[in-house]
Structure formats: C-alpha cells, structure tokens
Length: 517
Image (tube, rainbow, N blue to C red; front, top):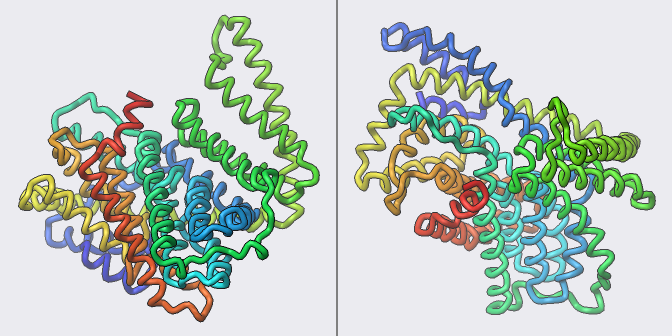
C-alpha cells in the first residue's frame, strides 16, 4: 500500500486524492480477502470533525496569511536591499546579509518556497554582478531559504507538533500510562529556536571562512559603488519585522498566548506592517495600532483579564478598561491598514494565496487520515512496530532507519505528506523507546531532529525542493550543476547540526524545560 502510494505520487497525481484513493482501493481489496474490517471507514467522519475543531490547526491559515502578506508587501525586498548595503563593503558581506535576512524572513513568514524565490529574484543577480562565485551564491540563497523549516513560527513545526502531540499520548497509553503528559506546538517552537539560530551561526561562519580562504569567490563591493546606510534606514528596515517576530514568538515563549493566539497577533501585525509599507508618509495610525498590540500583550501577561468573575478587584477593572481602549485604537489602525492594502490591490491576491495553500494543507490532512486508518486496519501499525523493534542497534537503529526514510521521501514529497503519513505511523513506536543518552524519549527532541532532517533533504541534490525553486528563478547563465555543487557544503553543515543534536540533545530540550518546566 505504501509503495503504491509512492509510485502514484511520483507520476504527478495530486497528493490528497492519491492518499485517499489508494486507501479506498486497498481497503476494498482487504475487505474482499477478509483482512480488513470496513467498520474502520466509519471512523473517518469523526477524524475529519476532530481536525476541523482542532484549535491548534487554526494557526496554519493565520501563519500562512502572515507569510503571504509580508511577501506581497515587499518587506523582504527592503530587508535585502538594506542589509546588502550594510554588509556589502566587507568581503563575503552579501552572503552574510543573505543568511541574516533568510533567518528574519523564516521567523516572519515560515514559508520555504516564498523565501527561496524572493531571495533568488532579488539577491542572486546582485551577487553575480558583484563577482560572487555562482556556486557560493546559489548555495547561500538555497540554504538561507530553507531556514523557514526550522525557525519558528514554521508551518512545519505547527503540523509536526500537532501530530507528535497525538503520537505521544498514544505511546504513553500503550505503555500503560493512563494520565499521559502532553507536548504542545509551543514546546516544539521553543525546542527548535536554539538549533535554528545555531544553523544561522554555522552558515555565517562558513561564509566568513570562504571569504578568508578564497577571497575571489565573495569580493567586497567597491566603496564608491556603495550607498551610505544611515541608522535611520537600518531601523526602518529591521525594526518592523523584528517587532513582529518578538510579538509572535515572545508571546508564545512567555506563555502569554497559545500558538494559535500568537498566529492571530502575527496576522494582524503583518497587515499593519503592509499598511505602513504602502504609505510610509502617514505612519501615525499604524504606530498607534502597533503600540496598542504591545500594550494588550503586556496587560494580558501581567493582569487577570477575566470579565466573567463575580468580583473584580479595582486594579484588574482598570486594566480591563484600558484594554478596551487599546482595542479601539487597534481597530482604528487595523481599518486604516486594511483600506490601504485594499486600495493597493494587495489584499485579493493575499487572500487567494492563503486560501489555496490552506485548502491544500487540510485536504492533504483528510487524505492522510483515511490512508492511516486503512493502513492500521490492514495491520500496518503492528508491522512497523515489529520492524523497528527488530532492527539491529535497538533505539539507534530504529531512529536512523526512520530518519533515512524521511530524508529520502523528502526528495519526492512535500513536508506535509511526510508529516501527515509517516509521523503517525512511526512516532508512537519511537516515543516508547529511549534516547541515545539512555533517558526516556523526548518528543521535542524527536520533533526537532525530524524538522532538521526534512530541511536537509530539501537542500540535497538532485531532488531537493529548494533547488527546484531556485532553478526556476535563477538567470539562464547559472548552470544547474552550479546550484547542486553550491549547496553541498550547506548540506554537510546540516548533517553536522543533526550530529550535534544527536550527541547533545540539550540543544533542543534545554529551552522548553527552562521555560515550561
């Protein structure tokens, strides 16, 4: 059944209908041969209803809206332009600026394809014009673009966190723990933050090392060609996305908001940022709304804002009244930004793009739910468990086998199919094992390992998705082989990061433990 699904997917048939169609065909074949109970199909409506009422997954369309809005409002273009001028006069400076902007865009949008395409269109021609090696330029852009897989708020981490939450509870129930602990998307965001920043640091270190050893591969911009970048221009480009990132990630890590609530903050913030970007000469309404959002986050984090209590202390009542006033200011700025975005013709393509991507995610999720139901009904879950438990090397062999499987599937399938199909089948088995250091398996560590592994497969020649995105926007004079060779050092950096996570799990587990206990 699994092989048939892979074969049909490689033929180019739509993913969601492949998963559901293969499931129906094999379910009916199993029923004919008496090895499948058709009652499994009766559980599908309940699965779909559970998906549609899952509050965690509401974050998906909100984060997608946030990413598409920031892409359409040219925030990335301004960031790249400013950072390029800021670092361009130093050797390797353009590559360094690509790594920094890639990290900022990853933390702002979380959409890999959009980041790679945007930076490929804006940075690659500039780097080639300045005499950069095509291999180094292509590798830098592809690697920085895939940071959206691992740096929160990543769509990968949202859907992976939801699947791991279900798998972790199932694993504990299978072990006889009837009051299971849970793992949240917020835990996974906290766990992925340090590994993501470490990857950015490794990318920058590699850029500086190459500039030192092979100066001709990444020359500095001549001083006479560079523009003076004032502090005001830097703040104008960096401050809005950084404030947005801090508001979204900070509210999650501080426990002020759930990932879904923080996604709503991000969606509103991206609209305000787009409204400011489209008419920077009249920024006051946007500034007022932005300060109102920050004020609301502070009030929610420090005061008891529940209005359903019978007795409300005076201090809390003052805070509630202040929050209502801030909501009015936020609504004013929101309406102004909305009208600007509408008049500029940006809102319609943003809503269309958000709807298309969201529909794709949830239709794939429904198809994957049917696929996993039939797979379990045919005894596939027991087969996977026996296979992983029987591998030589115990836990190490099982984890390596799963990582290799996900790595090779990443050549052909998008992360959604891998997360929705593979993770529910293998994660409950892995989460009953021990980590390499002998401790009980930590779901956050396992999730971060999977995310970095998928990011690596998206970069690896010849089938990495990021390479296809970059090839589609690269100038004709850039050879495909230059792209392939250019990403190899960054793939080795990714593998080094995976080994670091393997031998030092604390890189992924320390921050969630420090924040949430």
